Image (cartoon, rainbow, N blue to C red):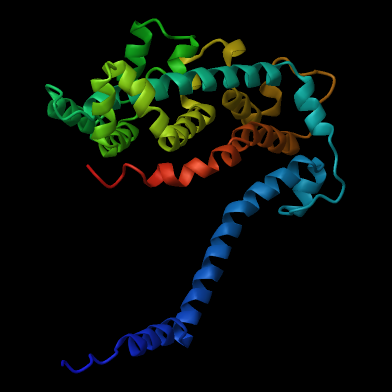
Length: 304
């Protein structure tokens, strides 16, 4: 009969508990928490200041410099912003361009990523090398402008999302995600008579909700916050997006031609109010996509 094996689990467990419960580890955790709190405050305090300044008078902004709560709150600036016809038109244009552009960009990215995820695709490696090449080298602003001009997209809303319809980095992540899906599901659908379009629509897309929500959010935020494309490709001021409206107000409050000439709102609080109303709509989508966001950020990023 063999002698009993000495129990070593308990001492190892005690050593682990002593290590994680030691004074050094507690100090390290405390410092991490304090550092993260400080970084969080540095991130959120400027936004709180902008919100507080949008409700304050211009004299208070110039006198106090930095504050998180106005002494005398007023809605006068917001009434002025929503009363001018420039803001509602710019907001409607931005919403429309963001919705249509996000649908086009997500659709084109997924339609290109799915065939590239098939290892039997002829010329797959060459296409992937060309995609990676575009991540390192790009034509630049002037060649892109010339292409957009020669395609007749100047002063059209298509110029705001078609030149960047497929992000190569997003494309590679989506392609890696498609490669990780079980091949047996796709093979069973093909045995049942499904075409490649049917496999993509009925099998791939329903399994891609996390990554679909994540990159739809990324594309939507990129279009919403983009002001360089309207600045380059939109000459008609009646087609300006919300970011161009914010830019003009930030540069000069008097630059808006349709503002009421009999009333000049506070310049600083007007800038703050316009920034707030341009930022809040896109922030409202984060809570609805939060459950997919973390999973979609990590999925498809390990396996190449």
